[in-house]
Length: 329
Ligand SMILES: O=P(O)(O)O[C@H]1O[C@H](CO)[C@@H](O)[C@H]1O
Ligand code: HPA
Image (tube, rainbow, N blue to C red; front, side, top):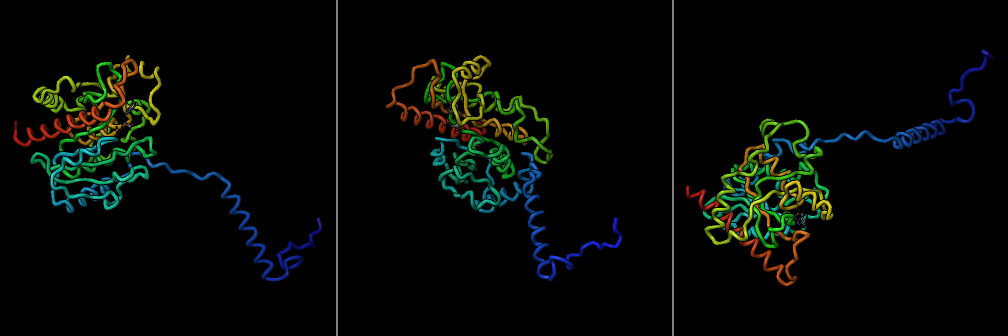
């Protein structure tokens, strides 16, 4: 080895001027940046339970109570095809989702981005239009967020109004099914809004799911159905929750019937889990929009009126239950 040869410091041969050296450095930096960008980045996943902190949810609730100058006791969440029921709320303060700090908004929400805080049968209520669905790309933590927000607004009773397909042959289009339990196909796979660290201010992590649908509210709903002469249109059943947006195959339909499902839909189970976690009393009513596979579909012309009857029966049930609770009946 020739020990007289000195290492090139960049000034000697080709890089003669300061400008040339600077250019070379920039080129090297650019190359290094390119290589770094080509490497996969670490993705830090936010668990469902951490998407909205307790303080975030508290701020949402504070905003609603301040704007409406009212603390609601009854919360209503309306699903697809059910938003019209928000007309039930008397003298409402109407709040846009965009006004509520950090409230999740889906581009697929359309125009149903409103909450109505007012009265129903003399009871203070808040009604939320346009439920968020998982199949629209919303994480479970966002789908169930409104439930926690209602809890921190002071809500004690939660009414979830949705639509579903029939699995049981005796559930017909336009019937109302009072949900008494669910089979959560998401939850079995660990897809749950409670996944992640638990904030005990909301509730305890291993929440029990017995009586998740409040027995007393179910009894009241069935009793009112008899009182208003609609007991042939109001059934009580088990809801199977699936991912969608594709509807079930005939084999899935038969399987769900075998394991005890009466109706099938793509919502409520994550909401009910979170509601149970934070101690809300839940009643869920579902209007049948799709007949069971082995039942003849009603004539096309009858669909609209059957669904409107179902909506009307649901609104009667909710209104009368609130009336009875308000008046200690
Ligand atoms: O549960 P809601 O919101 O009523 O919506 C129901 O209707 C949609 C299918 O049309 C599904 O999302 C189903 O769950
Ligand atoms: O037929 C259905 N299947 C699943 N989900 C549904 N939600 C409304 N109708 C249906």
